[in-house]
Image (cartoon, rainbow, N blue to C red; front, top):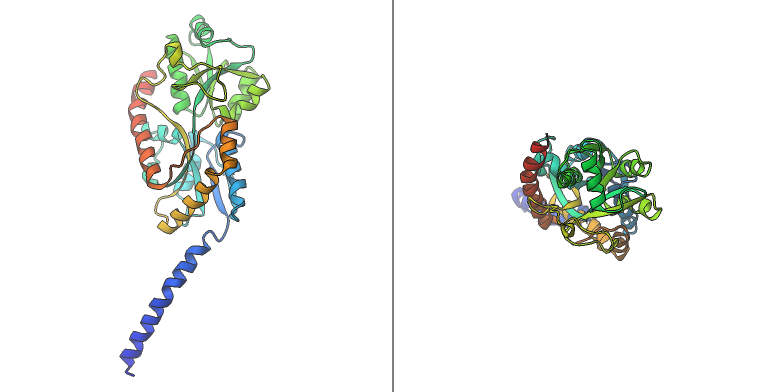
Length: 324
């Protein structure tokens, strides 16, 4: 056999071997723990959801380590994710708050810096007051009118959906207010319970414990329909106030990885997280905490994020620019 023939046979043999070796490599991911960056304080709704997913994913034999990196309305933690190695071993919890920051050019981050994996939740937002605060939305708005520029509304972060709805509440009253941003929902609910602020815009999942303990109470929901978890709490819409004058807004949380991760790694991440999100345990957890779960992953999530971003680009100009 000639040297050339031997060389061709050798190359062919290597090519044949490369296919199973590649497949074997694919099956090794994840070969170590996955870092899950939550860009908010511990104890908030996104942190709670991430830690529930951590437990459920461990049942698949995969180790996830939750890392809290709060600050700048989520931008600090999300920047860590965007700048991480593109190997699939760092993911993060993206939220509508980051999209609102992007809409206002308050962060250099862009959606193109991320690979979208799976949506974790969509969350209604509620207006809450201390337990002995105004009993109804009408009473709260009347209090704002009597004290223009003095009533405070706390929000987890600034220039986000919570802030938008706080601003819309003040517009319903027709007076200015004091916006009080915090690095996370757990801090907001603590100060609301302690009566250090007059009201707050929060998710059910980050306020349920204090509601059940009767330290705070919800008086309105920023949604088109009442919540199954709190059927006695009216929507702003039924009280005659339009919570979405510039178009529908969705408060959501979703898993992302850095842009440019290998396709097979993205596919595996989608499998891991979607299996946990679609589990009966997580769906029960969602019902108990007042948020919704769907099956939006990959390309479908890409489209959803872009849609919310487009709406926020428009809303941010009309709400925040005029609010300054």
